[in-house]
View: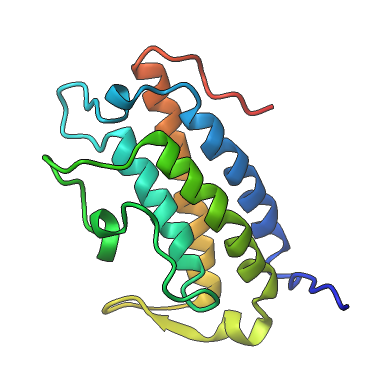
Length: 164
């Protein structure tokens, strides 16, 4: 059986993807359900919304290879909607379960994407981007969101995110 290798253009993305996969789990380690929704009297997105948004993004990465897969909180994140003030967001355990389900499938999709597909365009609702640009933005956004989770850990009195 032939093993698919990543395009030279996506190898760097895979390194980031793998780091993000680990860091996301660590960012949620030990966080209480109450603190997942604590906004510290601000209008900032809480950890529950940030986490679900990152999970939703990974599910989006697999929409062509695994259509119909949805995270537990799909209805809360569909079409990139923002935080809903009175919504009940999934638990840490649900987010982590969804993350463990989707991450290997998203990684496979990333490995399998070829140069022709990377150069093709995707309509992002009024804005067209190449798949390469979409993947670039996705990796940037994952890092940004995990950084926000790391900041929330400290703001809420938890130990810093461990990167080792």
